[in-house]
Image (cartoon, rainbow, N blue to C red; front, side, top):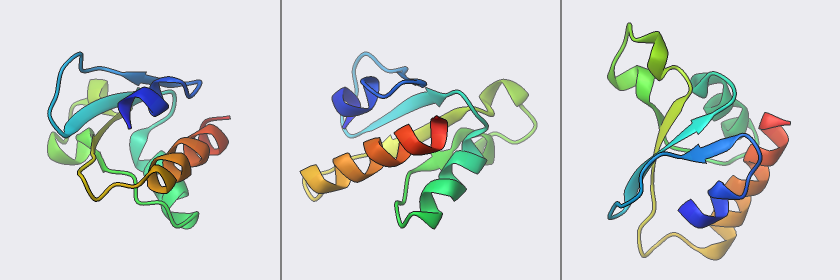
Length: 87
């Protein structure tokens, strides 16, 4: 998932190492990006600002997780959705 998202324009993977959760930075407020993806039937993680309210520097961060149940189709749907939403 991290490798696929790192190729999406406007997405920066922030973790060098991780197990199944990692954080990305997007070029727009994360809450709006996640909502736009949900409207496309793609569930896309949690905005970090929800976990740490009142910190504007976290506004564009999203925490994502992938497990053994995450399929290639799931990854493609998220990557393609992000390409659309961030364009």
